Image (cartoon, rainbow, N blue to C red; front, top):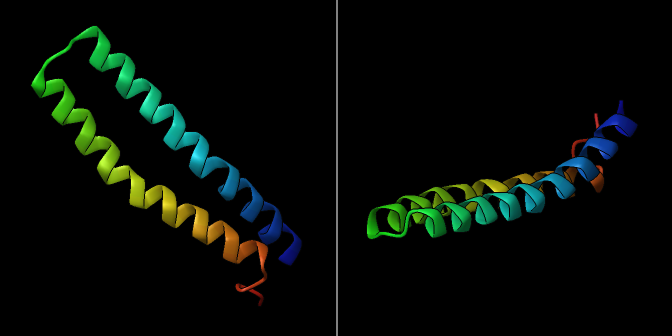
Length: 71
């Protein structure tokens, strides 16, 4: 079970920045399609809300990799 936790820790650490990268790319693409203050504010809020979630996911993966959740 501890091996699964470590492997999933690596998955979370890879997944967090990848998801953030693709969210930013999508936001920039949507802003370029429909430029306007409403679209910019909407995507800024989306990214601003998801940023701490992604950081938390990365930290969770780091602790799982370092065996902090050992049972």
